[in-house]
Image (tube, rainbow, N blue to C red; front, side, top):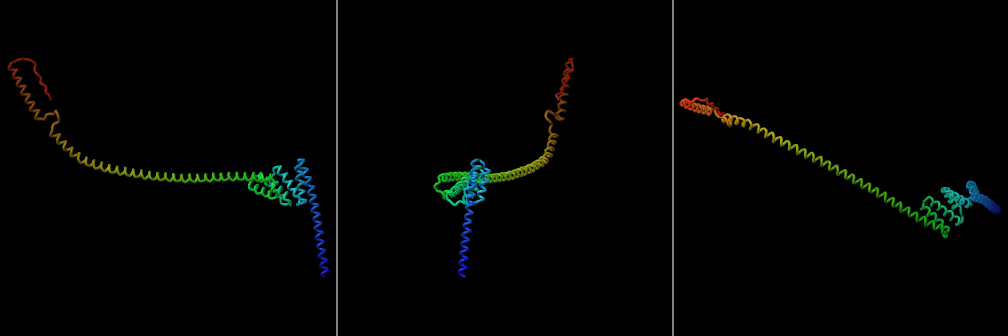
Length: 286
């Protein structure tokens, strides 16, 4: 029984080793095929035949996932055509399947370049750092990292300034709004005070008019009461006293009598002397 188990175990071990050998050979075969397609694609690309190169690169990628050169080179082709989204995807794929630090370094370096084209400097900084972890001696990557940091700081400063300006504008608007509301309230208060003052003035004027009317009515009543009395007194005085340059009846009679006596005396004198002449006409001075 133990012998049978040992034989079976050896059989499975041999079968597993054979399967692994076959799988290894298949992978090597697929890798060779993928490499051949990669060479064909490189040749087409050197002849500026991008379409043929893209087709061969895709075939190479589909043949073997161990061929990191195919996606990396296809990423470079996309990058030169400025199709950066496709380029980034291929560089990322190359970095994931690469087994050597050198290949990973190149893939992350170019991913950083794509982020620089997108002006995503924060991600570019992180990607260049990853590239340097795989090859710290690469001066080009180090230079790109320094440039990405500088541009990132500039962006952050500008964004901070923009935010400060927005906050300042917001504060100014709020301040102006508060001031407008305050001015509006002051105007309302002044308006109310003006209306109250006008009403008070009108009330004072009305009261003054009423008082004047009352005073006027009192004066009118007094005048009306006084006028009849004054009128009666005037009538009595007019009857008792003559007007200026006017003689009384008695004075007229006395004057006529005196004149008649004077005329008689003159006539008597004329008759006595018997002097003829014109008759003197006397005039009254009244």
